[in-house]
Image (cartoon, rainbow over all chains, first blue to last red; front, side, top):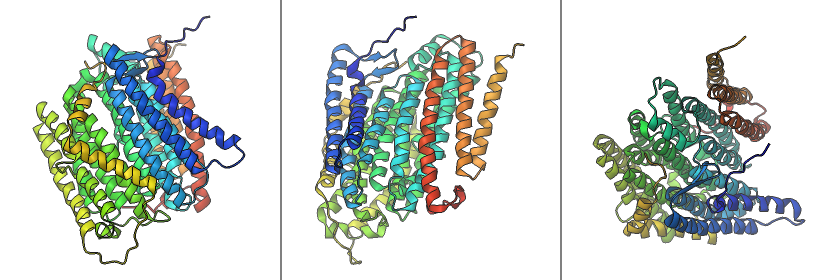
Length: 490
Length: 101
């Protein structure tokens, strides 16, 4: 018997290969090298790998320009503008997050390079999710991403909360994955394929007499995704896990996981279930309303910076869903722009929270931020800019991102949903402003200056620079998001 | 004797339901963990049944992926359970109360 090997387009899968290869290189180095591999080398490998992925995305983009979007490996992997931009953001987030994690590991005296190995492997899973064109491949990417993260969340052996958060994340994450793959199985039964484009083709050319199976499957897929992006009412794990995880890991989660999960969500809803838009839009509508409002309101009452940012990130997930709800090319571009700008902002925010946490990573009360900008003007101003960007203030990326998704919703006749999202932004403005004001308030407590190590400083600088540069001048990035279309839009 | 495919699907749905119910009601981390495995195996049964009715090999191939993922989850999950157990000498999730709000 002859087994036909499908054609492999190596440029398309190069990012996954680089990230996973780098993880393997580090893993073998720790096993084979007689002396300990130092943190510095591990970070260097991670940074080099993510920079290499960024270079590869440039060539992928040129390839798409020349020959158009393609699929490879028996149509399971797709190379289109959307996947390239999402891959680029993930690589940039990994780069920044690994710089932050380096200083954190030095501060907490963590020997061993497992952190960087797991982060690289997880990122490979996230990249796979952005490129997956098959429900089973999405599931694989999701699990590669999650399994590494479960360990990363439990990484801090000093605090009991770290392992506790990991157990919670693991049980609920496993639950969500099981729901997702059951949904995939039901969709497979209804349409005869797990391939997204085949599903789309089947639904476009057939009328389902009994669509119950497809609806049940689609609903389960949506629940699985809602868990992963922490949409209300499936958000309960997120504040606990954000608080319990080591702070650099929280930053990594808030960026990389969101990008990966949203990329896959867009692909499933738009490119394979796009013909069923009238069915899933009302469900998404309810999710958006709950997610934006609950996220913003519960953030108001938090006294812990990490929990507050967790609820704020739930609120942002609601905004990202607005673009998906619109379902148009403009809506997808809006969501993509939102993700692209939110990821670096949130990594840099958590970088500052990591520094403020101090040795032991325990000190996360909002009160400890009082007067930060008076003691350390640069650090305080950076945090101020990042918070204002998440608020959606003009001249920061957050403003144009919110504008893009809301305008696309208005285009598709979604005035109510846009208004509700805007209302939630107004509620959210309250706690972002309160925090920013606290930064500039009179210094009442005797606080020590926070040391900003070089590589964390670089990560914060990158985040703030992106927030301001593309906030003042969003044109190029918005054009990029517009051109990064999803293959197979029905 | 020929059992209709629908029965297998119903069995799988019931297994999945039992798993989901157990996960939401039981308080021992290990049993909750077994419930996830039960759910994943219900998915496998569904895949195989559909693979048979559709006459398509893809469903059977998917089962292998699910099995591999389940095995990987077991290793990491048990590791986390052990890490928590070392600190608390209990695997009950009710005692995980440090994170609240």
